[in-house]
Length: 338
Image 1 (tube, rainbow, N blue to C red):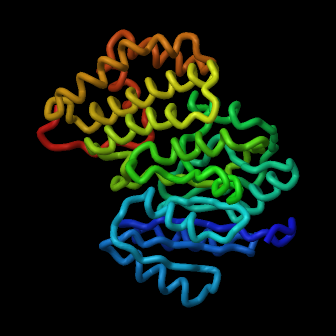
Image 2: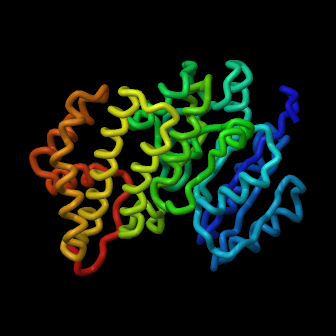
């Protein structure tokens, strides 16, 4: 479909060990005020009850399609859904988050009103127990080009995730944009930056229609995994390697993003107390965080971010301790770490 009033929107949710929150997520999708949806639930070999929960929902809502597969990872799960999606536009949701009732209609209206191929919001509401749904707001909408949007994300002015946006399926298919199945850290970042660069017009609004759960101790953002650290770093190189047009401005932004990723990885190691067990990895991260910190000094970022650069230049370990102290989501400590 392509009619402005009847466009089909595909919502993709990958599921793995998410039974605790998946019902709330699905409920927020089927409760959208925009009803012409295709809801694709991918059970990525989840060992819990996610698959059965999804099947139950599909029995009562014909818009829901459930895919059961052997565990292949988040990127492969999303790619399978992207390949089978029929919608004019795509939204990708995390299994433990929830949507405002106008999430779809808000993004869709941004696209139609601004003749855009992508609509996004730079941030989302972070919540612990129950989200606070925004009822009154004064929106400010801008239209950016693809390179400008990619640069904004590389400077971390846009949340580095795939779920804060709606994307034209034609844009993704025509340019063969998919998640890199080798990555399970940084995969959404790479997917988003690549998507932006193929778009001519991107509508940027500021209503908080996506609600991002930060209170789940089982979240990958709270735990140390050596493989995820390596994946996040490799994803940065992949982002650079897949630039559509490597301009000086884009390359400068990438250098900041690459440094920022190393710092985030160092923060995880310090927060989880594993600097001694993985000494070689820690020292590699520490070296880059310290030596490349100068990139933050000339970057068009906030004073707070520049201060972050100064701290890492002086003492990366203490910088991580200070940043982690003010972090909303606390890390899972590993016994015997240091």
